[in-house]
Image (cartoon, rainbow, N blue to C red; front, side, top):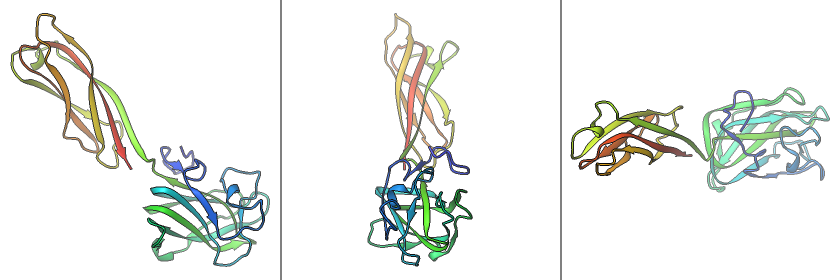
Length: 248
């Protein structure tokens, strides 16, 4: 969870949540390395470059490609040192690198502690992302993080179909079905995988018990939950569980 203004709460912070590895171009000393770059760390100086030039960078690398939506920078907490502008480079395979927006300068920090949150106009799909300072106040120093979409999103719920009225499952014979439209509590970014299973049933003792449940017409907004029966089965009620999972 991000807990940062303007950043989706469901997002993860790759640095703070230990979902990436960091390396730097240089370090001023042993206490100013990538190990101290957490944005909420006020007891360490953050990353401080050994020299002030355009060859400095900090790189975050993930085991698998991630979808990055925001870059968050903060200055050094104990001195007036911060990055005032930077550019982003990223790679999907660590071989070919792309300059985000052709190397356009992105506004960084204005003081030691105010968060500089930059929302990417188009999320970056990358395994590795590099921050290259372009300008700075007094010295290249920063704390930073990357906000990324979670590896998967999911929703789950139990749906009940009451058949005590004039319902196809409580009347007739042969194959019968009732379709219950299900609307997700929030729209997925892509069509999820939906799995359904029977949760409970209420069936007349004197009848056969041939019935089931399935899903149809899955979209980003919902799906059709289909309760069905066949033979002489008579049902007063059915309920089903569903789990909808969207992989990143």
